[in-house]
Image 1: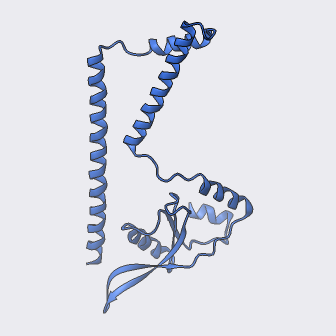
Image 2 (image 1 turned 45 degrees about the horizontal axis):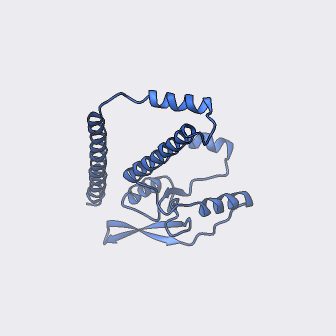
Image 3 (image 1 turned 45 degrees about the vertical axis):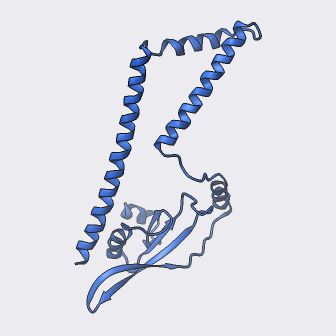
Length: 201
């Protein structure tokens, strides 16, 4: 891929790598070590796409080795100044992203709760519409009536107890999935730290 890119842009060179997040993390040292084999003293650029502090912080780091005698113990990242230059079109896009950033993205359970609240609101709207048509306050619309009939017909004909059991089972599956993904994330983080420690020995 790099060879193809250099055919089109022969003056461009690799100076480092980038990642998203507020700063360096446990895996940064391993990736930085890979790029250190490609270029001397690579730069690690981090872009805070989550706008954690209310702004999209863009930081640059270089790595310096911590040694004891001739034995390398670890790599330490040091922040270097960044001169951010954008053309007008990039600046406008960046400012729009900054202005529309949310405080935090909802997790799976919050997302499910928001979806259920929205569904309940829509059901209440349909209920009010049907009541107003039945009471003669509003003229009936055949298209809306057909759409409501199709939506009701698509629901499975289940006793309420069976339906409740299905919803509860689905919720339990969702909670189990969240728990397992959390365990997997923890295990990967631990394995990454052990691997880094083993490479230093």
